[in-house]
Length: 203
Image (tube, rainbow, N blue to C red; front, side):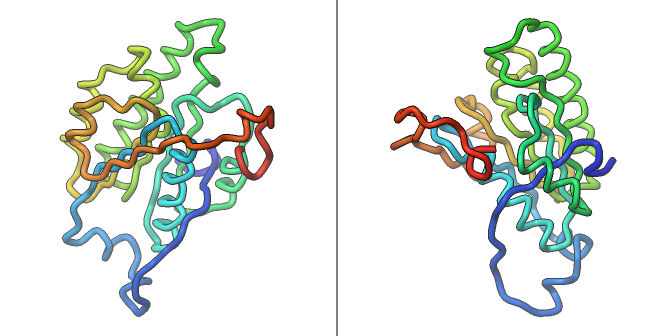
């Protein structure tokens, strides 16, 4: 699989000391590493953006990354367009748009199931250093993916694989299992002032 099957990565920063170790690539980075489960949740904007920042950082370190998007799918975002140019990134857009606008929940469920099966295979395969499950919490909320299925895939993952999960209302069991949880809080949003989503900022 390649970035041509989907697309995307966002902005982020890389830190740490320089030197030969920084360019050693994914093989060296894997040695002795404990894979983390990272959750970005809450009602504030920025969950996917934070996850894609980690994607950009990891790619800069020569790591292999996979992103599976469970909800977005109606339009090409800037992330998707950029991903087409990035080696080392598998970006799969498998959702059908926002479920609450759906005219066919059975198709949404089938899409979510297919996305989860692909995501579980990517996690179990161990070929990617980081696997991002973008907005999978919505699939959990609607019952398209069973919570225990996700937890089992996380528990059984290869020891070096990091998994990043985004979406509102992360369930308590997922929060308990995760190593890092950040909750985004909405303080102000331009939508409240009647402003529409803007290219380069929102998509």
